[in-house]
Image (cartoon, rainbow over all chains, first blue to last red; front, side, top):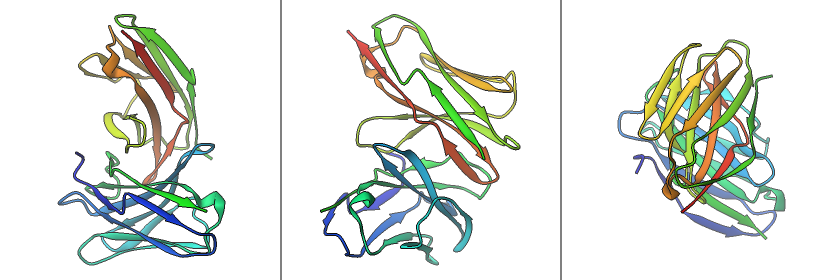
Length: 113
Length: 108
């Protein structure tokens, strides 16, 4: 158990819908990272937050957004969902912005029908 | 753009048969190279961080080494429970770029 929690574990929804994925980092970690893992693209970095502020952006679509709250938990919002958004979404956390021993949560499996 | 290439894509070993996994990388300003293990449907599990060429780290049957252009994950006398996908990632700035992974199967 890495200490990173993610909810829900599974999510099934329809095209065009909007969903919110939630992540709680390990106790004491200030940075949260979001990744997407699909069969054909491997693990892709989406976005990083550090202590409530956006720190780095990767291959995140405009339909996706994220935020980190004062209690350091983070949410990833996915809107106007398409079939191709079906994937595993992982959250990871690390102590600071540059210590990249990232610890991953168990993931949320999103299925868009 | 940072790039990470792992080989082979898949590897089958007999229990006790040692081997190595390769991770080749190109990165502008390497801050660290990371190895993770991932079991099906689960999040990656952190194994090692390597920071400079020549550095080596060991954990049980695994040993990771780093040169200026690649890293190796050596598996000595593997057991079936070592079966997993092994991911390599490089750090540039604060972000990680992952390779596609090597899927390792160890048969009893």
